[in-house]
Length: 236
Image (cartoon, rainbow, N blue to C red; front, side, top):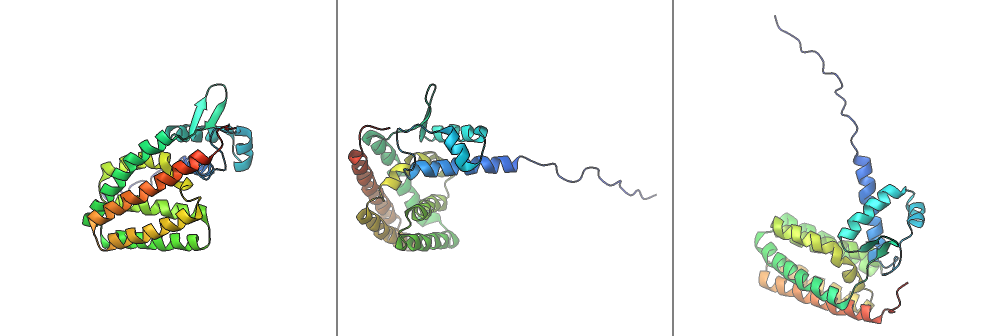
């Protein structure tokens, strides 16, 4: 006799903590943006109460975000003072850019050899969005697309080890890269450099793209260091 299977009990999936994870990621991203964009100044103590009110959250997800940002080098967790926005020195900038120049140069050369047409088309689309925000003088929005372009070139290289190392440094160096666009002449120059970068990528000229990416980052390094030197030495 054919047996009809009994209907499964409790077939509705149990709730999973996706919402909590989404909240955690959102808090990390918002706090990271405040630091990168200079809203929270280097050396400043971060007020948990003010941020909780600003984001409409409890202290638990905020403190979890602090741990992530501390691992990225954006904040220092001090026993008696709480969370402090970390400071950058010339040496910090040099050390980070030395490595990042090598990573991005390698990624550019490799992407020209390995990237599929769809990956390059996506980078072209990101570039157009970046130009749109540059034309509107929208630096934070421009910067987000700028970073997505650099990340997409690394992804297009198809090397997971390279991508993993890049991600580890990318968050740490982001604040210095943002500083380099605070000067309008340098911002315009960076856009012109991106035009050259895109042309080399579309032509799959690996050696040229690697050189352009290295020069692009060296220019950013110089401007970021100039911005740091111009800042007051008495941090709040």
